[in-house]
Image (cartoon, rainbow, N blue to C red; front, side, top):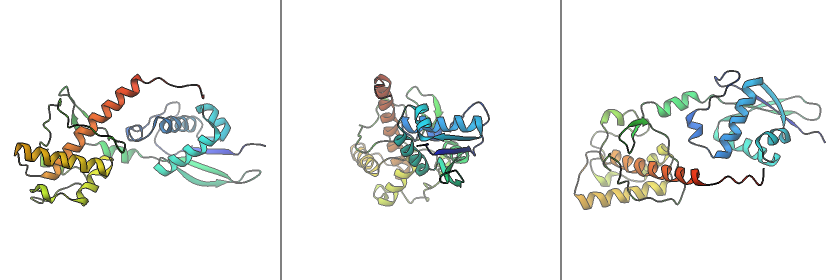
Length: 247
């Protein structure tokens, strides 16, 4: 039986013969997802419109056709590709997928965001994704003191987390609404934010130090530990072998 084909077109700003992938996608996807996305970008960028069966596309990616359908659904759910209607075919209408232009979202997310590395060098910040259940002790080897406030100028650049003056002068002023906002902003589990809040309270009680803006302090606790976990996961992945038995 003849396999149904996919019609894929690229509606982003890329050009022929090379593919550019936004850092937002690289930092917010699994290895499987971004490998599949990059394949779609390449074939759509070269040929504009591509007609592939699930079997043909799976062969290029080294996966089964069922995996192709699953990955298509995942990328649609993430908003990186979209269903763009159907076109007539011999047997039944063929689904059309379009690659979504997310460059504005990518630029807005990373614009003016900086972190301080352990070596003291400034570099562009990456969105940190921490899996549910992962824990880490507060970072000790960084030159940025846990809980140290960022200047108000930088705080006000971060959409959705703009604190009102004196609103968070008390550590008890942080509650479920703020926990949820921080979790969504850094794309980490809510439980992770609550854990960092407990760490912040313990730090406050043990040191006696007071901050003018406890929301900014909480954000720093979350960001620093998330960065540390990301580095630990990255180091483990580098040492892990690749199982190619199923390819």
